[in-house]
Amino acid sequence: MNELRSWSSYWKVRRLSRLWGNSPSGLSHYDAAVYLELAEHFEHLHGPHGPYWIFDLGTYFGHSAFSFLIGANKVSPQSQLRVLSVDLFDQPAWLHTSKSVQDFVRKFGSTGLDAIGKHLATVCAASGMQAGACDQIKLLQQDVTQLSAEQLLQIAPKGFVCFLIDCGKLPDVMNSIMQFCTDSRIAPKGSLLVFQDFFDWHAPWNLWAFWKLLKAGNVRVKYAHRRIPPMVEIVGHTNIHPVCDKIEASQFESWCTPYTSPDNELRMFDEVTAFLQKLNCHELAVRVQCLKTGALLRAGRLADAETWLNGLDSKWPPLLKDGELQNAYARLRHLKTGNKDLTIVLESAHRRRRQSAVNNWARALEYRLRLMGALVLHSGQSQSS
Image (cartoon, rainbow, N blue to C red; front, side):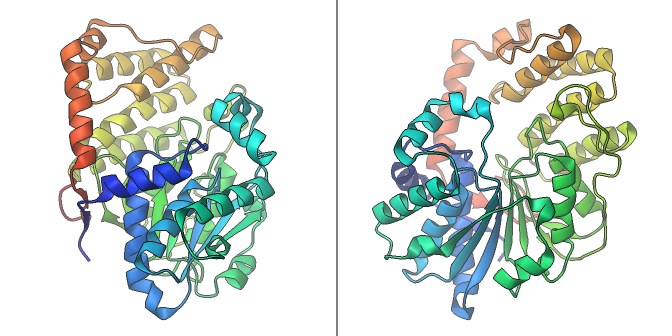
């Protein structure tokens, strides 16, 4: 299949959002829309042949797993989808300051595995799925670096058709994930990799792992879209371990942790930018360029980082929100001054023009029109929509 297309994705996500309510989630509208469509596609493709497994690397509060379950059960009330969702189920203290997390804890008692299980059972029941549908999601509390291939094969003897990679918050964790993704028993050819932390400032090695897989010829782009990272299909299993080949202790915050040489990292950001532009994913390319600021900061090149950011600011697309740009600026100021303030804003004449009433109106209109339009996931050989 060359592409996935849906004219009703907006309404599917609306229903999913109503079911999920105000529970914590890391998914954007487009993430949820894509997962629902992929789930339907997988159920049509794999469902007739018996149970098939998705590996959810990072449960958080379970929204990804639930999205796939909703999509698969739309195709068949007795869907063959199974999700292995792995997490430490230990949320950091700063997250507990969020109102949605506090409300969740009041309702379910904690953010631990049992609470997540109760929540998933509640939303599954509210969705009208058959009794026991929630059992299609297997929650596993374990450190991914301690997870063995044999454990995974006991659960999914044929491997996994899809990997949702959302727990690579440390470089050694990403190394373990990539070992699974290059094991033909666990990730057979044709499996899909979905990187969920592409633009996470604290996990630049997600982008690095994506690029290492591409460079080794282990994956090819399966689906591309202007709003979300390209999804790649496994086509080979060349050993690339260790992906993060120069891990050093950070003297500052976790995002300052070196994971390869500065030259390698900077070259990767330039090559990924060019790759995304070739896919016509120009907005993603601009956002990746913001992450290059982090590479310059990790290399100790603060002046170069500031010059780079000012250049991005001067050519930032007026219809693209500049959240990544502002985040990069806040990190630069943190290193320069020692004061951490993530609310600080790079004020400039360029930003004032972007924030004009006309541009704000145009940005909101463009976003709503795209939400209501068709969701199209093109093959890697065609243009992104």
